Length: 245
Image 1 (cartoon, rainbow, N blue to C red):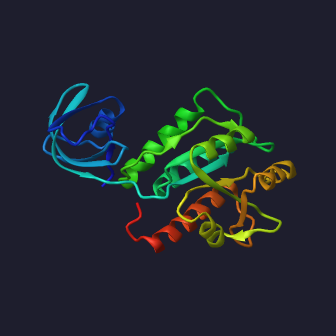
Image 2 (spheres, rainbow, N blue to C red):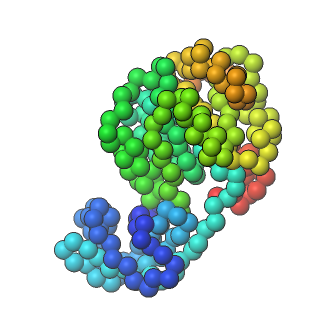
């Protein structure tokens, strides 16, 4: 059953009010009534089983029956992806949040075709919230501001991630071999735009000793490549630890 996002949820509360968009979603979209059970997530590792006790015009109250605190597994997975046209980057956020990616670094590359709007990051955040609600994910991913690729690489490194990059040509490692090289470090994979990274960007990766990897023998759309890459990384980590979350 899909859960609802309530950032104020905490493990000591016995009752909590829900207002705003989630109130509308619960009452007017899902048509929940007093006495119905609903699941909540605070996006920070806490899930709760609750029952609706009161519904007003603009808020509802739930009684918290049980909570489950989940510890985020290590290492973390992050994805740096180029802004894409036709809202395909929203799809990247949605599907990778469902897979458990913990952080996103939107990239402005030489071949990026989508322009940044003032609400780009907020739209990404809403897509991430919708995704964790759909799959009962206890963790809301962090969405960073879009940056030019040089600045983004600095930010990713300073955030404690080892970087690998998916490339279509050239000498590349298998993804498994690359993951073995970074061992237990947090992992960020770079996914390029339509048309791939430019030769100057690939040279920059080489200068920074970023490990290039292949995702197979087919040319993939950017959004497909991101899902394939994270799925393979997740499989690798689950093989090592079946409880990986």
